[in-house]
Length: 180
Image (tube, rainbow, N blue to C red; front, side):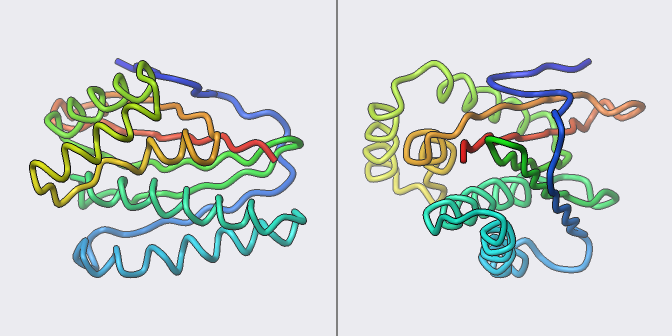
């Protein structure tokens, strides 16, 4: 079974340049991997900046790559599979994707978050999340996807599919489309 949300594209148009990175989840703890996220994200931004003449886009690419990679790592629940981060340069946009596998509970929470982000006023949702974090003293801010859509004017999309022969795992593809 497969479900898509938001602005998800199954088949990408002509790609000018691409970059694919894979992360094994068995070698390092999540905490150790998170410490390296910023280096990976900055590399992605700098790499694509060589094709674009915009420091703002470099910063946006770095921020988005860091956020979606961090989410993929945080919610990955399948040590037998790697997490992938992919970036694609098209004529008028850059598309960033992550692919990870997660459990039923994390998948359900993600779908609830997706519905909020896609249905709500992003500014109000951002303020509500900040207030909720202050009141509940949350360790997770919940602001990443909202910030990507609001501050970077990016389109978000997801594809969620149950893995064959694995009722306990779902493959999550998160897609961010950034206009250049």
